[in-house]
Length: 131
Image 1 (spheres, rainbow, N blue to C red):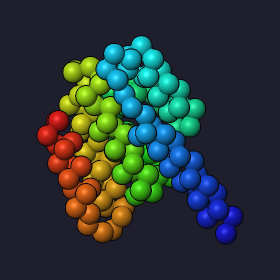
Image 2: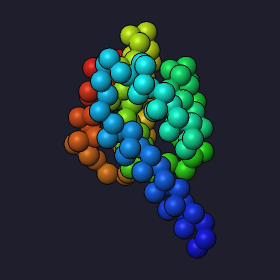
Image 3: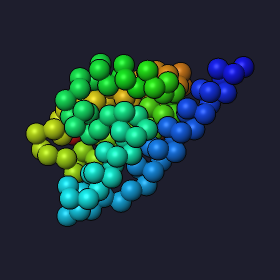
Image 4: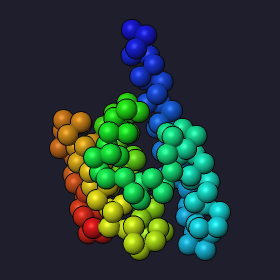
């Protein structure tokens, strides 16, 4: 029972973090100078990595890290939403790589949820268009 309680608490923390990240309104003029450092701080504090890690990790490495953090299907989907949101603000050289990672995260969310979701498929198609 204690394990389930800890897992629920971890999921709640992840949901809150990703919710904060998704709620941020990114402005191109301020993204590099201010907003990216705020996002990096939140990511590192809660998950132990930064955007620069996401730009270099393979999809497999990212999924291993997220699994170690006990992500559930909703965490994966929300994290994919965050990735999809930041892609246009990142350097062009990283857009395709981030899109591939986003696709892997959404595909994992689909598998973990064990149900078909039209909205998730739509997000997956948006990420594929950026690849």
